[in-house]
Length: 173
Image 1 (cartoon, rainbow, N blue to C red):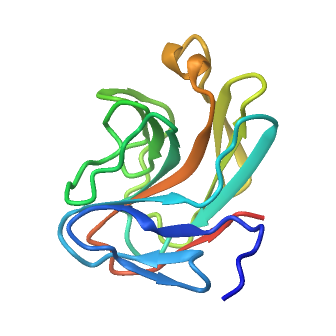
Image 2: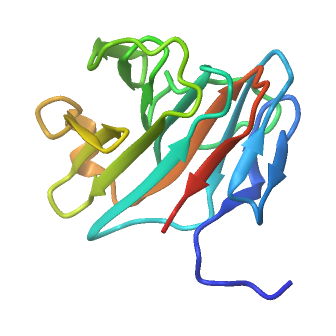
């Protein structure tokens, strides 16, 4: 196919023991294996304000966030969002992750089926915020909560899935 200017999941930028199953023009993904799968999007963000969202399938083990350009994907590894140079929300616990550091951010959502989680990326002001079903959950990361984020030159959307029994659908706009 002919490449487009639209952001999708990059099937060549995957981390885990298998690559999951990309659907709908690489905008939806399932992963039924009992390990963590990470995937990064095709577009990098270095300035401006960007937004994407995920409609969670029928399983709660989904995390959404961004990975910085200095995060090296480990194709054979099973790393989760609790590694350096990634910033993510894990709805199941309600925590956000900045490397191995996690903190409470919102209430836990252990049955996230059908919930739409959004992420607003502001590279000009170096902030990240999340939304749940259109409700702003507030700034999750800024220069005061993720001090190394202010030094990142570009990020790309990322997703982490574990033992998914449903399909997570992404809208990159």
